[in-house]
Amino acid sequence: MTDLRLEGVSKAYDETDALEDVELTVRDGEFFTLVGPSGCGKTTTLRTIAGFEEPTAGSVRFDAREMAGVPPERRDVGVVFQSYALFPHMSVAENVGYGLRFRDPPDEQSVEERIDELLALVDLEGMGDREPEQLSGGQRQRVALARALAPAPDLLLLDEPMSALDARLRKSLRRQVARIQSDLEITTVYVTHDQAEALAISDRLAVMRDGRIEQVGQPQEIYRQPATRFVAEFVGDNTVLEGEVIANGEDKARIAVDDRAFDVPVLPDGSERATVCVRPGALSRTADRNRISVAVETSEFLGETVRVHGRWNGREITLRLADIPDGDELTIGFAPEDAHIVARR
Image (cartoon, rainbow, N blue to C red):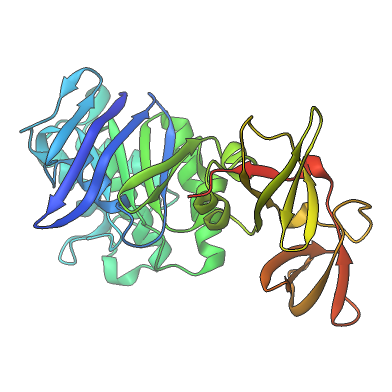
């Protein structure tokens, strides 16, 4: 196992900055996820860690070891690609054992014992003789994972390995990947654009935007205490209100949004404007504070709840209810303590 550190890492392609001054620490044995929209730098970060890309500036360190100039095959890293990249002319067992051509199995195992152990780990026992084309997408994904784990690498990198799978299979496999990672205690960096997946699977995650890290934290922290407006709007649904500060007392503040005043948590001294976000579950028809009338646009039945999208003064409002609203207008509110202050950028 290993600690991973990125210190001031930047990567430029011609005149395009793919990464800018990325600072990141992944702890020994941690499941760490990079999440963000397409083009934000997630995969470039992963490829830089793996050694497929050299940073324009900064350093990548495994424990205290500087990795500049160290080729991918000497970094003791297992990689699972989005496309799985299985060898079609090899059997499942041959694919899993491919990396053992260049490195002995751990714990004095034979190659055959290591392959059997890994096929059992990913629930593919007895399938070693099959060809990749005979497998489902989920099975191929697990073969790719077993192949990456075969040499017992210090670091496991996964680049959106489930993006081609249907939603139900994704949920099943992400639980399996999390279990395997936990059992092996292998330091893991996982890349996804799926916010729900990132929240469900990670010990910690980094939200990326335009080649930079917006926020790093545990899933609960990222969701409940987003540092910026971008994080608040990207990770889960959110209602965002921005306005002029008209009062800031000891127990609450007030901001003016258009012609309406809202009570919100106390703001830093000297604040002239503030941006706050309110999660859908905090908006309620029974709240007696910060009440507004919302024009209902759409309602989505989600099983346990109904997600309602509406507008107030042209602003998008998202809330969750127990049932489909009756009518095209709702009066809702929220408690001041349920609003969260975010940076405006």
